Image (cartoon, rainbow, N blue to C red; front, side):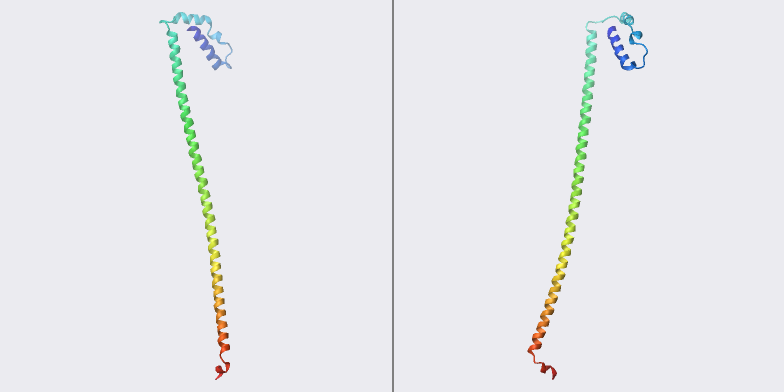
Length: 154
């Protein structure tokens, strides 16, 4: 166990103090100190104590990793759902804009067709007016030519 402490201290030391320490970890925590700790702590009080502690620590680590993976999966799913919702909203917005553009085009075509219809109606009225005045003039001429002009002067 004391040797594990020395190893763990070395690892911690290099992780935390690598750039700041002027002396190596053996100066702070030597084999002699590890032996003194072993004398103080003693060895395993029950057989398999160290293995049980390691197993318990391993189980805790596995639980923590499983929690972390579950959290990451939930965050990923949430991000995917958010992306899907945003894509649907964008698609709806684009479709709405396309519908609006189509409606504007249709309205412009309708107005153009109505203007053309009004022009054609006006032209038809003019043609009808010309035709009726032409019919009246020809009828007047026909009537005037069929009546003896001397009868008008009596």
